[in-house]
Length: 482
Image (cartoon, rainbow, N blue to C red; front, side, top):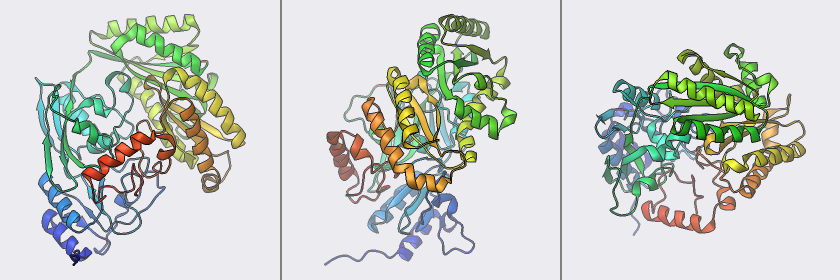
């Protein structure tokens, strides 16, 4: 005899008993507006949640998961909802719970001797950075959305950002996790250990899983000493090959001091100049590419500046840099970084576009860009290519803008699948990955079987089936629902 499942109203009542009535929102509530949780950041998809649940602590998360598991109700974990691959919003069935982690935003502890900070999953990245800085340390993860994205979301997608070349992705910055399993059990893994060889690395299994294997509720992250000096330079380069050559020189001359190396195409910068003219984009009109470099020095500003000047002199002599400016103060440096971070916003102002977050071996990026640019120009006459990203770690945001004056919706309808297939085929040819730091989410889940090793996919499915046999955690993301 089949047991009766609790109806949705009974589940909502249980969830309100767990988290408090004010922290469980439904469409039936007077004046309810769930759109901030139901629509993705790019406004590509709008779902419909059964409810938005906002737990206040890990015990409440565990209780919510147990109640949902008993009711066979899917859960979509959500942080700041800044994702770009539709991985953190509900589908349109009205049957899924959105588990918003934003109330769990505390800094639990800082251990200065162990160089660690322990924070809850809903802690906004910028607040984590400030807490570290106020304690005299650096937390190096830096992203354009750092004022709204959360560390739980950063871990869920293994976010990258602008300092990966020195410090690595979020995975490399994490030492321990607290996680609620699909059965509502709590894994207490908030260790600050650098070495622990007692079995499978469950931490790394959870990081990058996009909430499909467990719900991250807290994390212990690495801290670093604050640099004695941090300098930023903006260089015009004649080609992508020259940008790669400059990267090699920067590694040689700056060593571990090289903490940022961003490349930006001329059209990408022209959009910033067009939509945000007050930012005063330097050197873009006379060069096909510009590079933004950051040097963090452990000695002093004089030493850092002399290193930078020697690097740029060598680059000018080698012909891989045609002109360059070095920020004279922190305000100028922040202005240069703001230009780089404004490319995405300028694209939004310009209209709908097709985004790609890809990684290619650095040595192959010039050939990839030249060949793929040419193929897209043939496929979509008048196409505009917004090439920029983290060249220092081989991660390009290779975005495709509709021809000038074209209808954005029609462009997506007629060309998105063709463009994605062309770009992803090229990524495979050049030994890359179709997702570098944004994740798979829903947008790429159908493409993954075409570009991922089948044995790897089989192993991933086995892990998912073992840890979430009911397929209740973020179903249909990363792996297609079977």
